[in-house]
Amino acid sequence: KNPQIDDAYLLMGKACFYAQDYNAAMATFNLLIAQYKDKKESYEPMVWLALTHTKSGNYSESDILLDQVKNKIDEGAAPKSLSNFMNLVYAENALSQGKNAVALEYFAKRKYAPFEKPLNTRLMFIKGQIYQKANEFEEATKLFKKVARRAGEYEMEFASRLNIAMCYDPKKSNSRPIIARLEDMLEDKKNIEYKDQVYYALGEVYFRDKNVDKAC
Image (cartoon, rainbow, N blue to C red; front, side, top):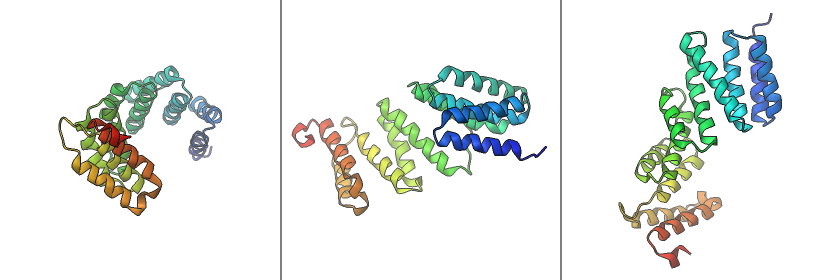
């Protein structure tokens, strides 16, 4: 009878999820889905259950749940506001299986949310990592530069600037400015605990320049 009960149970499920107690999270989400079967209150727990299955390695179960929610959204039975979250879980499920190209397709389906700046920036960073792994360094560099400008926390800004260096392509650019930036980063007191990563990036740049001794 209390209209807050479903919200409270959903919050409990999320808490279990973030505590990585996935069995308890699944039990809580399943309880909500059973209690509110075919009602609008059941669809957000279904997406969270799908995400929990992904984290547990149950990829097919995750896809089945997401497909059910997608069909309900298309029919108008489930809230359209779940679409962005659903597409991100689809993407997470694909990334967990190494299907990076599929993940990019789901990222593209997500509508830009102006009030979710930290999430937008994080997703941009993940897309940069995907392009970097695919050796599409030019596209990755564009994304990492945007992230470095938008990052609200220093760790993400640092990681972005480091990845820009790691995207160095000797066929398309010169390593001198990159090496100079990395050496400046070594001198910056904020980077004391990150020096190992900067040295690794320097080694990678020198290696791509075929300067093996310097890389070592």
